[in-house]
Length: 287
Ligand SMILES: Cc1ncc(COP(=O)(O)O)c(C=O)c1O
Image (cartoon, rainbow, N blue to C red; front, side, top):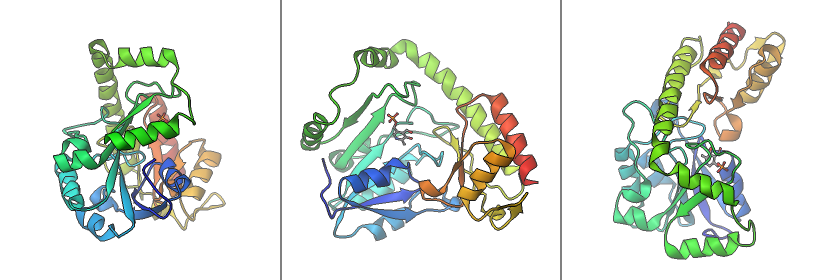
């Protein structure tokens, strides 16, 4: 609804796998910006500035991030917002993990940064993560009226409605009584994420920033590339994930489809016991 064929979209890697495909479906072209571990995989204002061209129509931001497990600080977002002032670039801010933040991480909506940011931002959110309503297909968008009207015109012909029971569930999810349950879940995730990152960093050749949001660890395992592990040539994240699954029965997601072949993604949306068992296996497999 907001992109035309020929438009370019700045997409920082790592990115959620749907984004490049959604951009291409709209006839636009993803312009992928590589980030690095030293910067917790976040795009810098300088990188953003250098990547804005005549055809740039949109910047996709996703914080807290899938698969990166990082969160932009309010100051970092303010710096990015400043770079966009005076440009034609709209922001698509996917904030679906906004309530799942850890330590002293603070969350702010991109649209809340300034009037300029407010006027150029489409905010995406949904009930799948914070409220464990995955599969119930309920999400929402806020943004400039003309953009929302265009989205409604398109969506009317793609999906008719969200189901009634999910809408009632959403009312309950946004109410006061749910807050305690969400906090309980957040605290549990925080514990698991800290544990997972600590264990990963204790494995030789594995480096993982502690997650500040979402429920993923995204370690760099590239020191193991070039190895032959029990007959499997490990050339990149795809080989790594396949061999780990086949030889040690641990399922992780390779980083390549997220735009970061040096990494793998591990989810901590499972029990501490399973996490511990999985990490034992990874550690043994890599030793
Ligand atoms: C960053 C991000 N945005 C959006 C979604 C979409 O979730 P759903 O389709 O369940 O609403 C996901 C799900 O994995 C995600 O990770």
